[in-house]
Image 1: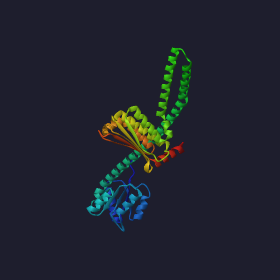
Image 2: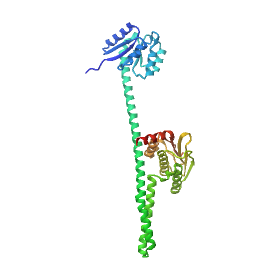
Image 3: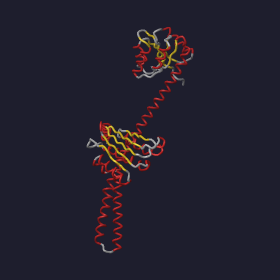
Image 4: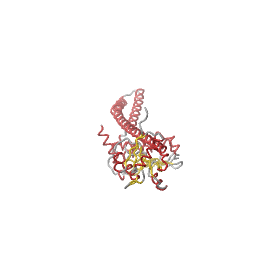
Length: 367
């Protein structure tokens, strides 16, 4: 099937010039239906009905100009090729029109150029429309991916909390009971060989109980129930004791409580940042700054390590940083990284607390 004819709207108050334009299109064997209007009201009414492919407009009309019609189209969000077909209007006027977004200009004395200019404008418009559609589709895909990431992260955190609870209630309770029974046997047995086995079993039970408690803390830090600041104090202290690094925590939180997801995101960010320091930074000191001023939670983790160039950062820690950025986005925040070779590294988490509260309310409503 042959394509439908082009539907062109011609803003022109001179019937003779309109006829010459139509004749020029016919000579070029361009299949087009050209509708002529000579007032701004008629022009606006014609564009109220979809289906127009392009606009051809004189510059000088009775009581207004073609550029006023172009300005109205922009205000209405109507995106169509717009070609000025006018008498000589001067290079400065043409340049101004092109800067303002007009597709092209054709002098009425050279209407033979019009079919080529029109075809080029239509092709450029089609390309831009496809690019805009692709950009919109990509933005929608990214938004859906972010929503999926948020859902998965929420599901993971809940599953971790459930597993931690089961470990505490079942495995932890059973190990505690075994340890009590072994301690009871140790007090009553007199056979040296049996006592040796009981002591060995008691040691293994205590190690298993300690491991289960460590796993529970990694899955869902119970210290978060005491608030974010208390959790960060415990995290930085135990990290310093375990690694021998000089880790200091500074700042305070004015709010008594933050949304649970924000507290978890902040805790995990600091935890991952400290892990990265231990693995990659070769640092001696780490400074953690916490603040919730001006309705923003801000956490900075800075080390005095070897730092990294941007390309090395992408190779070494890309997945870890990507996970932290996605976690920050899941609560409406963002993560910045400041680093350079030999100058240490600073991770900055920023979360607008009003946005985080709104997301938390929406999530609770969807449950």
